[in-house]
Amino acid sequence: MATRRVLSFDPIAEAKRNWTTNGWDAAAPGMTMVTSIMRAHQILLARVHQTLVPFDITFAQYEALMLLKFSSKGRLPLGKIGQRLQVHPASVTNVIDRLEAKGLVARVPHPDDLRTTLAAISRSGRNLANRATARLNVDVFENTGIDDSSQQALVDAITSLRHSAGDFAAV
Image (tube, rainbow, N blue to C red; front, side, top):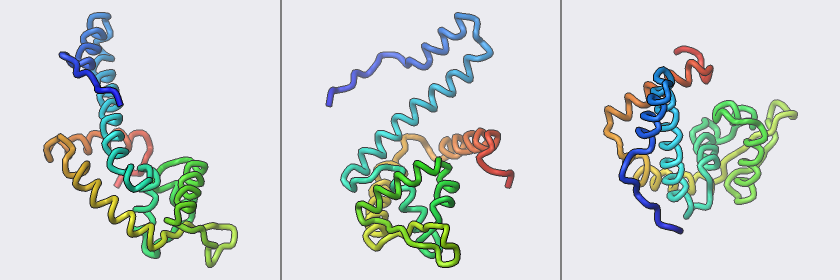
């Protein structure tokens, strides 16, 4: 892997300066926010990916395992998994297919609705989820590079964005 060259300036601050210089003052704060979030996404995704490599799962697969692990019976309908993870049904199918191929989940018929298929977490799926969570907690979640109060301010701001986008109803 090639070494990344560290810049001597903040390219997002430079982009904001260029926006302002070109008369787009009203859009400059929004462009800066969006670009900053997109870069933060890249940074965090790379850290999560690196942490999950030894477990041979993606973050989407990890999220599905954790959702099943936290469910009361360790199983959920595929449609509900998609709703909770806020992803397209095809993405759920792909994630469950891959987890099933690794023996981490199994598809089982719904006991009351034969039209519905459930994904059920296996014992090995629970074990892997526990081990992956322990690593993610130490390597990523407990060490974000942002202090606690700033983390909460960021979560609050993004929650407002998600709510205005219709991710969830007002609580």
